[in-house]
Image (cartoon, one colour):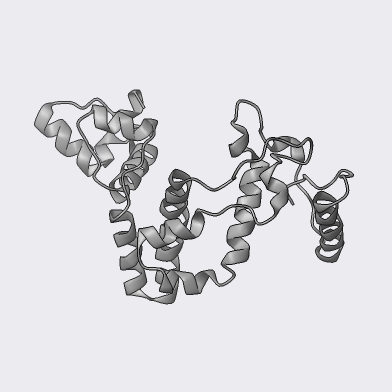
Length: 212
């Protein structure tokens, strides 16, 4: 579906991938996306989309029962360990794409990326699934999971910090991102309880959307 297996590829692993995909494409009527949508420029090779997809396929292959994982996996450390994987095939040890070989290196998913997956994938999915199934304990675990993760680091959070609002965990940074998108960016300060409180106390507030 990623559009990277539409051209003729060399023998070996890439060729076997293409044969398998050609079969599945016909069987399920799959329409590949344009490969040109993937961006490789100004990116470190270890972060190339091909490597990320290979890492994702390893995660999916290792965790076929994701719902069971939601119930069985308790701590952030366990989730991070599950996600810090290397592509299954030796092919990726000396390749970054389906072209020329490269010096051998380990393509292990980094800890920061694994943490981002826990914050932006696992916790939201866990909460929504708990809500759909009426599992209050699962919803509480999702919130607790975010509270146990370190705060995120990005331009938006830096903007909040410069205003004196320092996050202590990922749950708080997620709340800051939500406020920025749904209130600051929309200039809805008068509809925001926090914005109203600060404006009443200080007579004004330099909204994070101006500098983040």
